Image 1 (tube, rainbow, N blue to C red):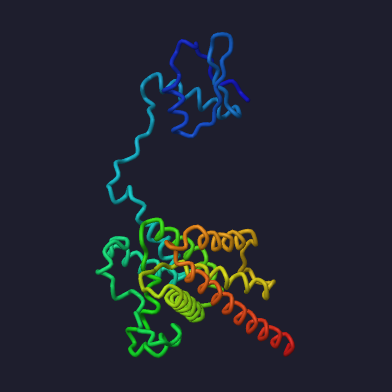
Image 2: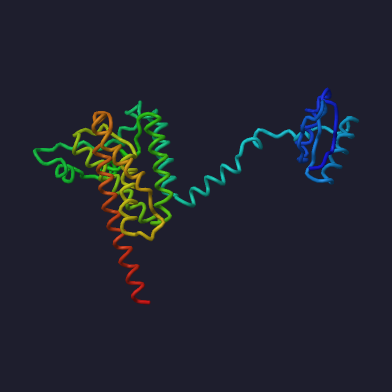
Length: 294
């Protein structure tokens, strides 16, 4: 270190130190026998500090003021747009699902106005003495009814329910979608949403439920089975995370079964596991065939 300046400690050196920081001049200040000493890392930097001090005392050196920015420049519009476009490129289906859930949340006032989104609820089918699943399969006689077996996944009741589901949907979706491809990912999502909603309706007998959590548990189950068979794949989750989700599923059923659609969680998980096993097995089979051909 090189001694650049020595001034009395009575002098308020803080404005000058602010100038040094503004101009990115490296320095270090110590106290020595009633004086303040400004140190520099080398002789050249020390000379620059001395020159800056002289100009500062003459009133010719001030902290540089950035030009006034417009409100549009203050907001990171460009970086936000770039981040959104990267997300769309990485996982377009997951992004569209998140946007759809947000739109439904706004329209329904986070589930408070059920009449505004009543056509998204699961279709109610008279059982006629049949098993719920059989009654459902025979009672769905229009495309809109079939679509309504999927749309409850878009419904959310309260901000915590919405935010929790969408964060995990994006976490798992941005892992799965690039690995599976858009078409396969859409197929898996539809199977998981359908299975989760059908099992919940069959279990509860009511259409007053919703949420993406069945799909989220399906994503978890898919990745779990996929990494079990495809040990070489980068699509994988830590085992402790999987265990936390499974324990949470049990606890939710035990502690809050009346408030949480646990059957939807289970339906999504099981269908996701089956899809993961099937697709991982097919992928492994084709991989092995390709190796044998070579």
